Length: 195
Image (cartoon, rainbow, N blue to C red; front, side, top):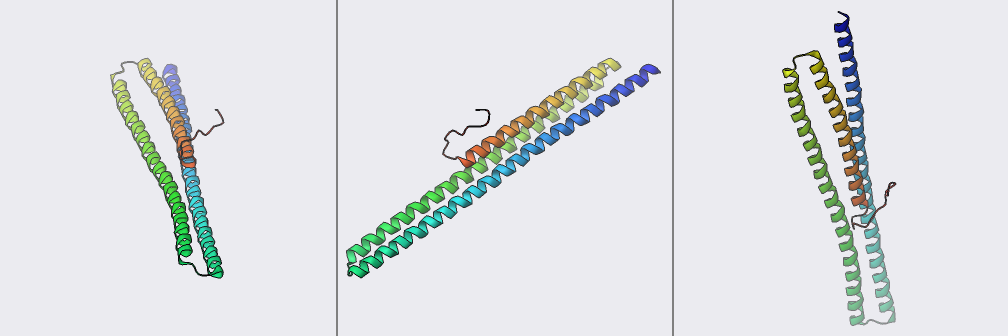
C-alpha cells in the first residue's frame, strides 16, 4: 500500500513538473512570437520612414526645379534651359522614387520570406512532437512494470522539455534574423550583444 501511494505521489510530482516545464516552454515560444511581431512592427515603421524620406526628397527636388525654372524665367525665357532643367528635375525625382520603391520591396520580401521560414519551423516542430507523442504512447502500452512506465515517462518529460526549450531558442534566433534583415536589408553585418 505504501509503495502504491509513493508511486502515485511520484507520478503526480512528475506530472506537475511536466506541466510547469510545458508552461515555461510555452511562455518561451510566446516570447519568441512577440519578439517577431515587434521586429515586424519595427520593420514597417522603418519602411514608413523610408517612404516619408523619399516623399520629402521628391518634394525638395520639385521645389528646386520650380526655383530653377523661376530663375530661368527671370533671366529671360530660354526654352532649351527650361527643358534641360525640367529633365534634370524629373530624373532626380524618378531616381529618388525608384530608391524608395526598391527599399520597400526589399523590406517586404524580407518580411514575407521570414514569415514563411517561421511557419515552416513551427510546422516541423509540431510534426516532430506529434510523431514523438505517438511513439511514446506505443512505448507506454508496451510497459510491463511500473518501473518501465516511470522510465518512459521520465524520458518523455525530459525530451519534451529539451525540445520545447530548443524550439524556443530557434524561434528567438529566427526572430533576431528577421529583425536584422528587415532593418538592414543590404546584408551588411549587424553586431549583436554576443558578437
